[in-house]
Every structure is written in structure tokens, then in C-alpha cells.
Length: 127
Length: 385
Image (cartoon, rainbow over all chains, first blue to last red; front, side, top):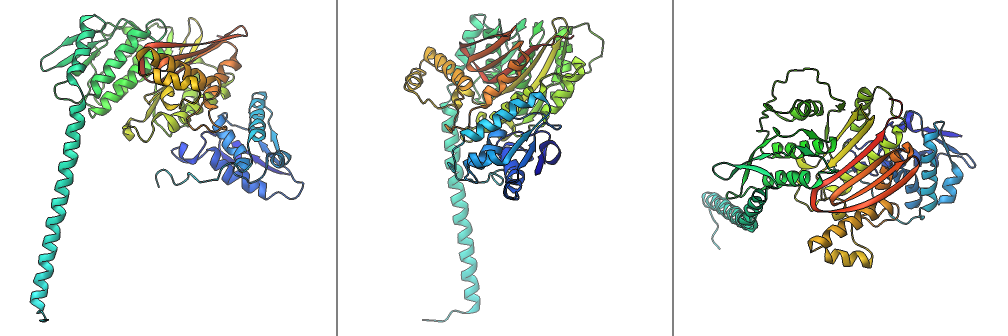
């Protein structure tokens, strides 16, 4: 079992869809997917699961972040929604975060596989 | 062919270089002339007579209180009450007058030289934020030359704007004696930020905790709404094809707490193109409305319809299925708190969702006057105070 603790390992203020949505380019859904989620998913052994802790010292999540960060894995064709849901465990203790867990699962389920081609927005602002 | 000497060769090269310089400078001159012509054309397009007539009509009809000085200079007096609930028309009119006069550079058009707060007795949190944003925009445009004059201000208004951080806008800040004034309203210093800045919400959180004296339950959902509001500003409010300069792409945020009725208000304002103009019309009905929007009444209905669609069905500029959830995220804080309202005002439309004792209702309203931007207000009642 592998873990990603968003508040501890990534940021406590996740927001925005793309790198370009934040002036310091940090904390967006695109960055989370590219630097945290995808590497962790690809390092899993067969049958191994990835637990994502979503409520540890995290302020909250906007839809843009969740949809780009999680459902983007399916949208850009890294794996289909069924496979992603098999590998992911979303964990929280604060009851308010059940809402965000449900959104993550909803966005993944509703995302269509390889429907878009990924183009990084990392260099689209300030060089 | 005769072989040329070294001296001759050098002379040829020098002459050539000189010639190139002349050609280059002529080309630049031509370019300059063309752009000057273009600029002249675009300034000519502005109908200053019509603009001045509009102001004169407003003065004649007593809609605004303006004193005319020499050389087309104007002094605008704010009304007694400014808010977007029961004084929408008067408040928006004054905001529009400030925006329009300060955006005009034509030599014959009226110029605003002063905005007087003397008559202002009541100003809601959201109105004070919008007013601050418009005056800040004006001050930025004239390179921070505004000098505040606080003589004859109402003391509650002075306290409110002082707490809001209004005077920190100016290079020349007035000296304000800090006398304790008994006012039930406490305001959080406003946050002005560039479009990409999301982390400022944490500053707001600490400031709210300071005036309220406790943690705000369900804050997570307010953060969600605010972060989506900021993301929307980044992605839609200031499109690249509009003339907005980089230093004008700001959003403004503040909050206030009224001890007498335990109401906490959070207001967010951007001066962008507005939600209805950022959305495409997709259905047949919207295309008809879009055509009718060339007429004033049609435009109002069109804005109302699109704003409602944006909040309720997640209509988005991009038309991608995974987009357009941001505005509905803003509803979550109000829904989770189960008591309060969310109102979104953009251009000529208002969408309001309110919930009380578990019963929710929503409405969409259209106005004749347009707010030059988008204003989002969350209002909740804190029970334990």
C-alpha cells in the first residue's frame, strides 16, 4: 500500500485547474496529477493500492482542482475510470470531506477515457 | 571588370550602412505615423458630446449630485445610502459614473476631480468593497495622485472605511485619530490581489476569526467557493482579447461581522467582463435572446438567463463536460451552513440562493443598470454569538 497525504506531501491550499491558474504555479490540479498522482500510480505493484489522504491540514478543494487532478488521469488516457477506481482509496476522518470524496469518485466515473490530448500549461505564463 | 581598391570598398560599405539606417528610420517613421493615425481614429470614435449629455441628463434629473467646476471638471457627491439590496439603482449608477468618467481620456469630456463622502451615512460591506475597487482603479490610472480628504465624513462611515483599509490605497494617507466608536459592524481589511493569487483566502480566514472570535464551521466549503471564484477570474473574467492592462486584472475580497444580528458577510468583486459575457449562447432560445440583447430589455433578460444557467447547470465558456462546476461550488458553503444566502451579481443580472430553517429558494432578477464586474456575497448567521 502506498500513500499520498495531500496536506503533508503536497499543499494545504490546493486550488485551480492548471499550473497557469496560480501565480507561483504551485498547488493546481494539473501539478498534483503530474507530480504526485501519476508517479505514485505508476509505481504500484500488481494488485497494490494507493491511499490518498484528503483532509490532513487541507483548507478545501474546488471542483477545478479535483476534476483536473483526479479525473484528468482518465481524460488524458493514462488509465480508464474502472482501473483508476480499483487502485485508489480516498481516506478522510473529518466528515466535511466526505463531500469531496464523493466528488472525486463522481468526476472519475463521468470522465471519458482519452478524450483529450494533454498539453502542459507550465510554460504558458512567465516563461 | 575592374577590381576596386580597398579604400573604394570601405567607402561602398559605409555608404551602404548609412543607406540602411535611412531606410530603417523611414520605415519606423511610417510605422509611427500609422499608429498615430490609428490612435487618433480610435479617440475620434469616442463620442464625448453624447457622454457629456448623459452626465448632464443625470444631473438635470437629480439622479446624481454633481458640482461642475471650470474646464469640464466634476465633483461627485455620494448618496446617503449605498447598498445592492434596496438601493441597487442609485448605488450602481454612482459606481458606473465613477467608472465611466475615470475611463475617459478625451480632452473635451467631463473629468472627475473628486468624490465626496460627506453625505454618505450607510454603506453595505459589498458596496464599500465595490466603491473601494473603483476608486483604487481610478487611483492606479492616474498614478496614485488621489489625496483623501476626510473632513465632514460621518464617523461610522470613517470607521468602516478605515477598518476596510480604504485609506491604505493612497500614497498620501490622512491622519486619523483612533477613537473607539460604538458600531456593531466590524470589517476585515480588504484584500486586493492579482488574478493568479489564491493563497490570500488564508489571510481572510485569520482576519474573520479575529473579528468573530471563533472558528467558522464549514470553512472548508467557503474556501472551496472562494478558490473557485478566483480560478474563474483567472480563466474567464479578463480574456486576452480585451483591452484590460495587466495591472488592472485585480480581484477584491473583504468580510464583515455585525454583532447586533450575528451576520457574517463575505464579499468578492472583480472588474472583469462579467459572467453573462463570458458564456456562449448554445440553445435556440439563448440564440434568440442573444439577438434580442441588442435592445436594452432583451439584454437584461439574456444576462439573467445566462447567469442562472451558469449557476444551476454549470454552463461554461469552454463547453467541456468537466468544466463549469465553479459557480455551483460557491453554493456549497450556504447549503452546508443551512442558514444564509449567496448572491451573485454580474452585469445586469442577479442570482440569489437563500436557505432558512432547511427551506431553500432561489431567484434570478434583471436590472436596467449594469454593475461593471461581478460581485459575489456569502451571508450567514452565526448561531453561537
